[in-house]
Length: 225
Image (cartoon, rainbow, N blue to C red; front, side, top):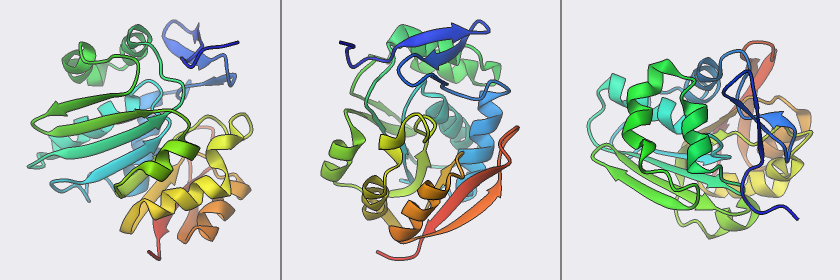
């Protein structure tokens, strides 16, 4: 029986592929460019950033999205602190995270700054400009107990075809309950059942151009509370 840590094979040197879901953790073309297109631009960031802006994420993976968001925050010169909460059932080891992050030269200084802080499990990181929490466990359970609401969601589980549990309508409803009024969500997938689940939860959903080989992705904004 597998433990609750991520199982990883490495492709092309430093591209991690989940052995549990048989899916890469980020785009084989350019993971950072995909993150910026899907999760940052998909949530109208950094334009919406303000002190206390709260990003929540399903699927922490390598930590790439966190690094990209904090990098964007710093480049934009936003005063105050970014809040970031990520839900991850199968955390990578700290060593594997550092190896995966080493692929992205643009983020190297930031990755080095945080390198010593990774524990590979549930944890908090507090910096003058960041309040980060990693919640370990099945998001279908842990999210229900989360007391906060996010301004933007990064829905970044593995492919819905391989990891359907992280895309079910009940979980999308929980995401909606934990989204601030006017909050947004973005994901690389345009799978019909994911879009329908978001719509049923109260989001207005748009299918927009995706990154690289993915023709479409999904953007959503919460219409109701």
